[in-house]
Length: 108
Image 1 (cartoon, helix red, strand yellow):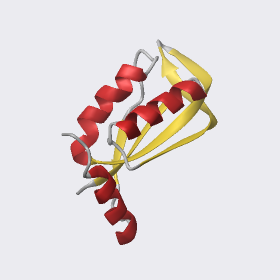
Image 2 (cartoon, one colour):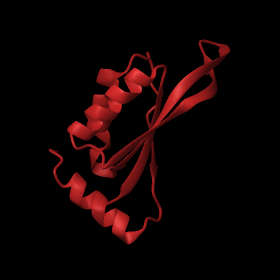
Image 3 (cartoon, one colour):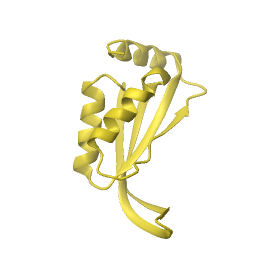
Image 4 (tube, one colour):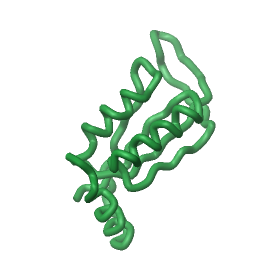
């Protein structure tokens, strides 16, 4: 199993909570954290934008990335949501075992 950390941002805590709930109910993650609000600065339509957003961190596995993207996009309000996966290069064995157990219920 290749553990990944997927991040996305959204503009309201309610949308962040809906994404977290959807991801967990569909067994696409073992754990989801919502942080924020955070301040994001980025290029959008040839201007620099600065907004308050909620950062969502999703602990999952590589094979679940595509369905995870589909689910996030179905619940997201942004035209182009940030959905980034980072491979986790090291993880505590006990935590990884727990992730494997929880993600074994995922429908692929």
